Image (cartoon, rainbow, N blue to C red; front, side, top):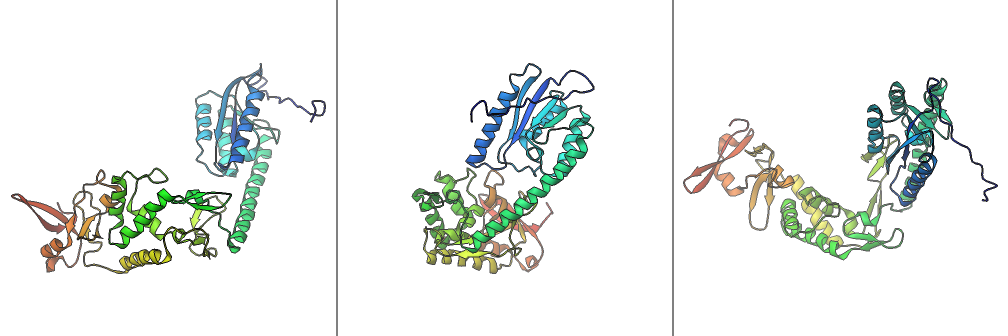
Length: 388
């Protein structure tokens, strides 16, 4: 488009109580996802406001507050919160933003924020709607636009959810392969095995089948300096999630969770149909290995022991959990198993010793395991839980 064809309109800042134009001006920008196209849009918004505001002689441009990959319906927005703090500290006179839907799509949150700013004497200018929040007609117009924006968001979510369900019905997985430990993405949507991580996955399955408890496997991986894909430490829960994940045998269960109209992700416990796709991706372990490991999980769920849920750690009070390895059976503190020695030193009690010290009086109730020093030997005793 030539310069002759372009239409350029100057943004006119409002007056406050017939005083000079607002002086300290900032911009607020937001994109709702972290996808590349959205992030490019965010950069375009930044450049736009830098050009629009940084060289104006009638204002002091104090910067841009931005949120990346955050829905406008959510209240936890670091950039937005920083802008509100600056406003409360008296550092802002005017906020410029592209539209009401960019500012917020939750009507109540939107009105609360704007009224807080108005009470501070700070105006918000919405470019697309050409509305100034401190004008006489501003609040009514803002309320109407905010309601429309929220309804539009709900309709978009409904349409997106319908589209996703249709893809699931056709067996199309929307999972990004690179977000699953052991895999990476080739062409768009193509599942490729990441062999270094895949070896760790196979190790987890075989160690578990051989009798190692998840906590012990997590400790081994940590001791060997093997990183997770997220940067969080290995734990028994992370190990179990890998064992239970059907993708490692090449299948995929679709719609395990869904996003409701509030934008909150919820586990799908029957609200919507699930779809099981066989042969969705290359397998890292055989079906036989996967089924054997998961059968052991189910076996541990159904098997109960006389002291299950009744023994407590003397250090933190957490229930002791039965851990079976190739060599022995221990009862160990749940905090120690989940969070490590730094959270609780634990108390590994051999099951054979437990049965030696347990009498008929311990057949019911809750008990704390106590260590008792007997010369160079450590003995154990059980005392009622909650009594030192």
